[in-house]
Amino acid sequence: KMAGAGAGFDRHITIFSPEGRLFQVEYAFKAIDEPGLLSVGVRGKDSVCVVTEKRVPDKLIDPATVTRMFNITDKIGTVMTGRIADARIQVKLARYEAANF
Image (tube, rainbow, N blue to C red; front, side, top):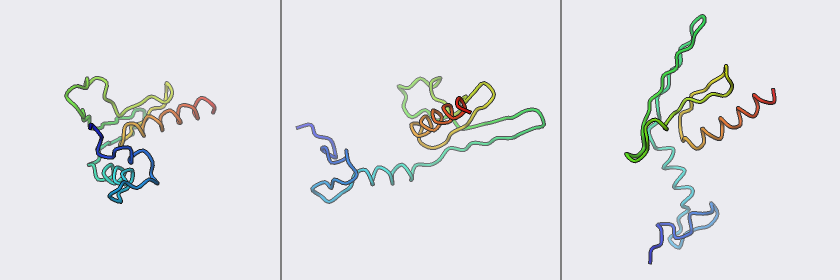
């Protein structure tokens, strides 16, 4: 039997496992405990410099595909820290807002 740790109990936040655990809540706390990335931005009179850490989570991932810097428009950009999936959603929303502005 090849069941995962949650065996289906990690799909919903309101379903307890037989041991009385809420896996989604545990996953959320684990995400919070991960060390954050450092990002620094400096604005000059006519320029901006943004620096962020680049951590590649796995050896099998191409480092060129890992980024924390995103273009919103051709003149607006952002640096995101935290979960990359959350960052992509926020970037998508920002692009939508910028396109409708």
